[in-house]
Image (cartoon, rainbow, N blue to C red; front, side, top):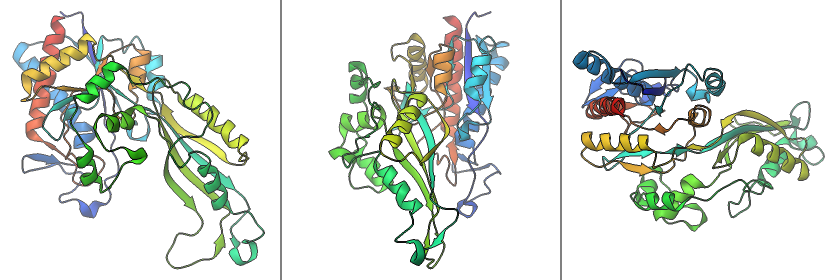
Length: 380
């Protein structure tokens, strides 16, 4: 009998389970031990999906009907960039019409504090490639007279950033808006993570002289990036093989912040490479999407926070932005929905890694939170 509709987004595809030998139990045979469920995809993202279905089932059993209307969008391409989801959303706006959206993930941080992530950076993922000859050449023959594809690509990559981590592509920073005073206020309330990052990732310092605190967080999520994700060229097998590489390629991702877009970055990247003398370097766009955020003061965000505070031992904290990327922009920009996070994650989930797991206590708390959200949303 409610006029309100809540849309859930989840995905059922998973990352490869390899290396299988590092799993303590078979990756695709869910196993319960030590208060956790272990299986590939249980944390990203099937556990989040089933906990929501669990909450809906409990409400139906108790109340006989749901307190508000519910829709699910569950896709199978999230792990490869949700390549068809934005078009699907654009083509089915009436089918997907709703008043608010719960995103695929959520959970608690290392302090057991539930967090509310308000947005994600965008991404523009490309492969840069260059070919300088029909085939590899003996380096003794061609090393001093033929162009080397590996060096050619390295020089092109070197033109993208300077030694101070400044991206050198003209116009790249022009659309960017700085974090608001509200963003900075929320960031100041978040815990210090510098020591945790150093321990978890084995690094001894951060870039650009950053040491921690709010400056580290703001740099992590409100600054764009240009990251070389992988390089391929020449001989990389055991022993030696003296060849001059004919081909070289690199996977590069640009993390984008408001109001950058992938088409803008692609155009700027092509113009930059051409101007720097690298018109022979090809650009293959592999996927991406713009950044997107929900207003921290949106009434639905407040509802999710208030209901979390009824379920968890600690008050929910607002995180103004996360550094990762996803297709939330399709729901925020195309459907004009506030998008909130609520789920069962925790720092030890091991998503994308061996021994992926979810904690049963958080699974139940997450389901209870979803049930509370549905009940309160139906009253609005």
